Length: 75
Image (tube, rainbow, N blue to C red; front, side):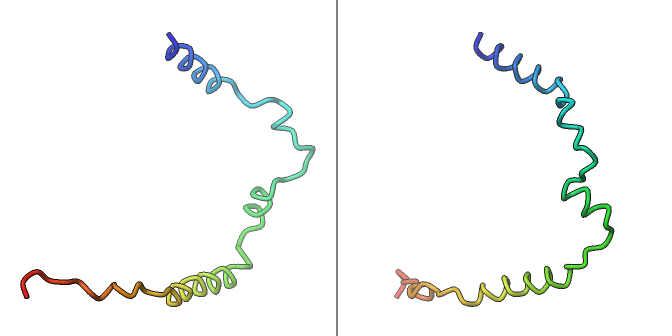
């Protein structure tokens, strides 16, 4: 019985559309709409440079002192 109620509530909320107030923004575009309307990304070079910086940070990780030592039982 409980599963039926939960399933009915999920189904009902999925069928209901957004409120009218959510669709009317008074002519103000969201950040995503403004970015998509603007065309190309002028910050692409900085994004790529930041990506290389993050990849470079991987080299600063300290390895565990026992990483190279694996005792063998066949000695």
